[in-house]
Length: 208
Image (cartoon, rainbow, N blue to C red; front, side, top):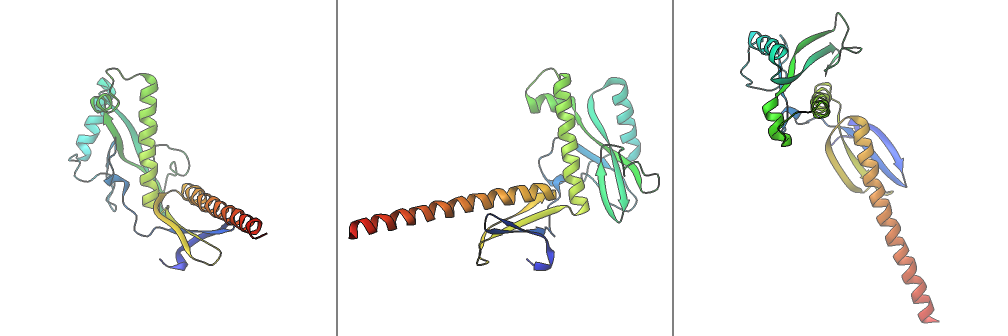
């Protein structure tokens, strides 16, 4: 851990929260994901490994989906300008004609959805939930691609490490979790201080 990788230092309830960039994050595509991410690019190795599809097979699958709807699929757009990011939406900057392009799809079969959620029928509400989940998987992967992965260290006033954790995808999420842990330590210190104060009062009364 190097101090030069500190992204932000926050004073919180008498403690110091240091946010670091995680330089060795795990790819979210190694996790237990719902969707299969199939993407192609000339310079980057993207998405799930060993998915077994060619570009032609993927196009054929998505075309088949439009006719029979056996899968739930979302497009994958890549933005490549200084850093790399991915989205399922064509919103800026993923609509930039020079630096963005569609590179594939993330999708899940309806049979897998039924098995995952224990249902026989996929309602519009469930379909929306599945799409949100797929969007979340792409967001985590985009954070990984762009280096938007962090860890934190909580220190006391003397600079002693109280707590630390790594692998938070998204800066705001890391700060939120770090402050929550700092709150926990602050409350413990407050509780210990109260116990000491109570013991001192009791000892004074006994000695009198």
